[in-house]
Image 1: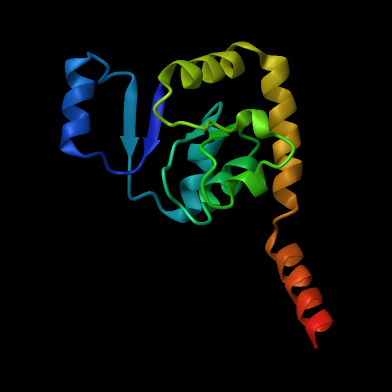
Image 2 (image 1 turned 120 degrees about the vertical axis):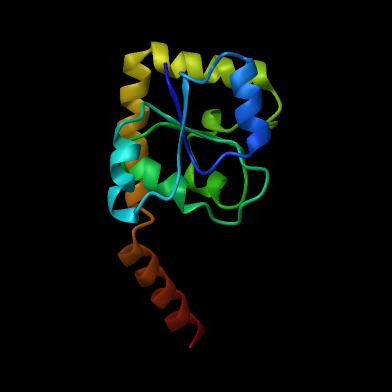
Length: 144
């Protein structure tokens, strides 16, 4: 199992990973052009998004659209994105045991992974730019 982290790591984190002898298991990739980001998503088996604050993390929708099961903290619009899939929400990002259990459960159960992959890809389509624009226009028309 490899952990692919999209983003530049702080030196403190790299040091901790080195001391834990995990340097070969944790890969950091940063400055990825948007045109190739889809390849990073498609090389993964799941997405773990443990943010403590984010108003509208589009990376969650991008991962869902690529068919990745997403385990996330309930920040910003994530609970809306994962409505109907609340079992994928982690209440406390510091609860390492629960996070590990959820990740292991998905990685070891291909049937479950395939279910979430298909269901979340379909759910992501509800947030396409066309649908969001259409709903926004509908709200404006009602107000006018």
